[in-house]
Image 1 (cartoon, protein in one colour):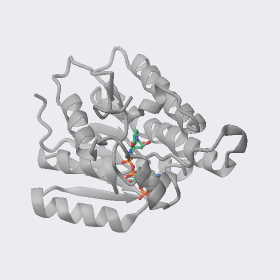
Image 2 (image 1 turned 60 degrees about the vertical axis):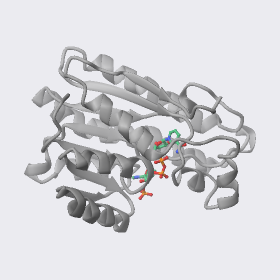
Image 3 (image 1 turned 90 degrees about the horizontal axis):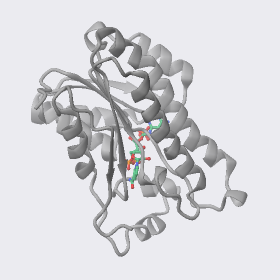
Image 4 (image 1 turned 60 degrees about the horizontal axis):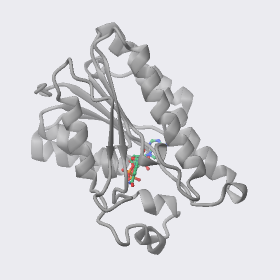
Length: 248
Ligand code: NDP
């Protein structure tokens, strides 16, 4: 198993859900963390907790991944001791609404595409050249079952996650001949703040999503990401589809 002691792991969307669970699991393994999200207070709380529990060193970055210039400037000016990112977990993402396409809210579409697709691309474009120069690294992109199956009202979100899947595959091909690995993790239903965000804070609607099934936890996903990253260097798990046992 690959040793993560003092490896630098950068997680976008680290302030809740799957990203926060990844932070905990990688901290426990001795990694140093760069935690990225917009909610600085959450990042500070997580950073403090991981320091207390695991003596984890973390570097917190308040950043909106949709801001192309800010993404480029932030990663071009990382402090020297945080520059050599070993693992990039492109996790920041969201869904909005479940509207029919012809009735959809165009602001919601833009938010999903700008975050899930363009944000992921901006971060990748900023950090992967360093990995190529060092000839080491692992990029984990969080896709979704929505990139495999389109469900009613899923239209634009499903399209954004299908794009993540293609981008992961394309990046993997572009990196052939280097030591860098690319993994696409595609979860089914995971109980996080995702549903609250999808329905703009409507908790009743958010809870209805989990009726009749036991959703995955953020830790279920984080453990699988950890497994993929810690395989020996010659093993690349290029794609994993993880669903609750009772999800169709
Ligand atoms: P959460 O809502 O709990 O977490 C989403 C994270 O993304 C938050 O930390 C949020 O932080 C961050 N984020 C959102 N927009 C931005 C932005 N513009 N810039 C920076 N960070 C941003 O949901 P999950 O943990 O469930 O979601 C994580 C990933 O998993 C997403 O890509 C999602 O699409 C995917 N996924 C989730 C599933 C589920 O059922 N939960 C199923 C399949 C895939 P902040 O608001 O502080 O910026």
